Amino acid sequence: MNVGGEHYRTIWLKPGDDRVVQIIDQRPLPHAFVIEDLASSDAMARAIKEMHLRGAGLIGAAAGWGMYLAALEAPQASMEAFLGYLQAAGEKLKKTRPTAVNLEWAVDRQLREITGRARTPAEGVRVAHDTAQAIADEDAEFCRRIGEHGVKIIEEIYEKKGDTVHILTHCNAGWLAFVDYGTATAPMYEAQKRGIPIHVWVDETRPRNQGARLTAWELVQQGVPHTVVADNVGGHLMQHGLVDLVITGADRVTRCGDVANKIGTYLKALAAADNGVPFYVALPSSTLDWSICDGVAEIPIEQRGEEEVKYIQGLSDGEVKRVLLTPPESPAANYGFDVTPARLVKGLITERGIAAASEAGLLELYPERR
Ligand code: MRU
Image (cartoon, rainbow, N blue to C red):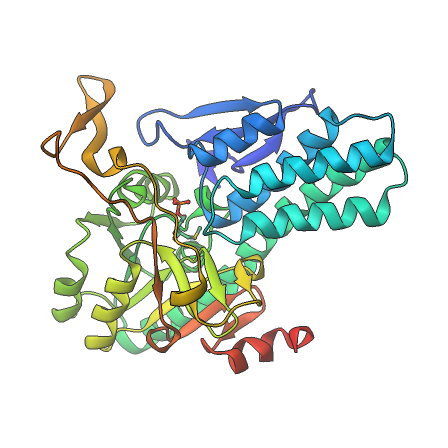
């Protein structure tokens, strides 16, 4: 997508040096645009854990490239030693963040492809490279298709209303959270392309403020009208008819349609249900976890350090600074995600179309999973 008029993806192989992966470092955004070089699988694991990059699809693509970096550094003397190193690197990558299923999906896909297609370590490196590129390209293409399917919902509201469509979103399920386009934002970008007037309510998304820092920055870059609101505002806006539609992303969706997404999503879904506002979730199939049904009971919820709650980061006198919000001695809890039960979700916007949030609905779009 667009950064200062130039097209960027969020992750790519460094031009002229195919032993280095480059990413947009999301930590200094929106105040500075920094590209970071990652030259080892450990560096990639750290970048995922410490959230230099983040977002379900991008974490998956990063795990794919992390396995390629692991293949480059693995012992090349025997296939056994090569595969042993990759298994260990895969375990390390999987442990970095527990909720987004795309991470383990990408590591397992790499291991399957490499063990199935490579007879020598050199072939293994080639397969790991091609698989990482395929995961990234697929992510971008699936997000593009999500835009094409999701825009129909916006179009329909616009046809009925004949006026600007107001869409509320939570966290950042934009192109920064994927390789390109994003999921929740893809239908918005498509609507903009088709000349449908939209306006986006952007939840700030405490504690890390992915909405206020990242979604807002993206929408500025793309020229989409938007307003940042504090996390608690959504219910009020819905009661006053100021939200036509909610679209969020997802970090893991069970085969029964329960949705894990950034903490606070569940509260928005409750408010949407109480006010008759359609609540949609956009996701690529790499975010589906077919092995579980009950999201509340079975999805692991990441808990991060308390400093993310106690401190806030922003620009002051031209410098990015962190300031303490709470009494220093107050303990804080930092749950990263919550689960929205399928009954509160009007539909799941996927690369294959819009499914009802249920096992039957998902199986209709993915019959090979029957
Ligand atoms: O903790 P993050 O920033 O990696 O959170 C994940 C997310 O990006 C959101 O929950 C998002 O809405 C899911 S779609 C990528």
